[in-house]
Amino acid sequence: MSVDTQAESSARSRIAALTETRVQRPEAIAEAAARRPRRPAPAGATGRLMIVAADHPARGALAAGADPYAMADRGDLLDRLCTALDRPGVDGVLAAPDVVEDLLLLGVLDGKVVIGSMNRGGLAGASFEIDDRFTAYSADAIAASRLDGGKVLLRVDDDDPATADTLEGCARAVSALAGHGLMAMVEPFISRRVDGRVRNVLTPEAMIRAVSIASALGTTSARTWLKVPVVPDMERVMAASTLPALLLGGEVADDARAALDGWRRALRLPTVRGLVVGRSLLYPRDGDVAGAVDAAVDAL
Image (tube, rainbow, N blue to C red; front, top):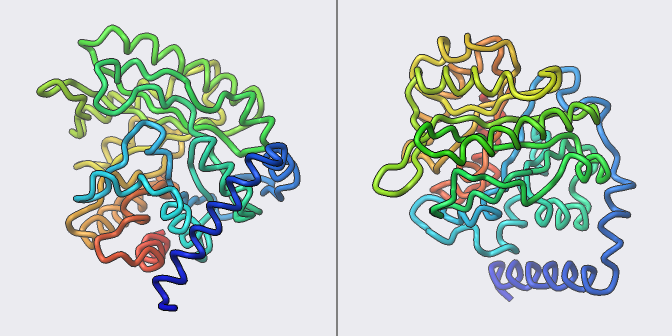
């Protein structure tokens, strides 16, 4: 049997075992969450975090690079996540409940930081995309599952009245997470529709406004972290808030070295405390997940 055939057989067996557990012993998910060893604090002594993001499929956003369905194979995604989580320097994962629970059953989240993705209802490409409903984790569920925090996506479109509901929902989530003593990770953008599709405005001025809005969400900012893209003039952008921030990876970069250089420059700023990267690490152009993760860890 070839190496590729063995890998495919192993992946099928893993998926079969996960599904069998879900059919026969669904309570095993809660049991795995209850016994999972946790860190005393997410950022630990270093004050920095390296998180792998995998919450894209919950919005129906399955593309990575040139492949519109790269993330559609759950077995392949789990293999890539397991590889990434096993690399030195990787602190944890950001995902919606289904992926988090697969990883719990696989036993790969012990001692890791686990951030639950909360508002996934603004489906990619939908007419209601800005109305980003909370269809995944709630703050209570995150606390009950003994996760380490929750993440919300906030896209502010001045021309879309649905922005108001999303703002209120994100503020409620920040307050509720803080009430449980958990991290609230807020990913803010100023957005607008271009040819009918929501596009994020990645200018320094737009990100300064987005960071300012996000920093004030909720009844306290004590446990709020920001998740922001690398844009021009990051020093001016990050001067808009004292909240700790993590850099996001975004689309798979045409030039991985240039993306790494951008992360390195931004990581020198005092409020920037790490990375939350998904497709760039899980689906690198050369296919080397371990190598892409190691390079990102090195940037820290």
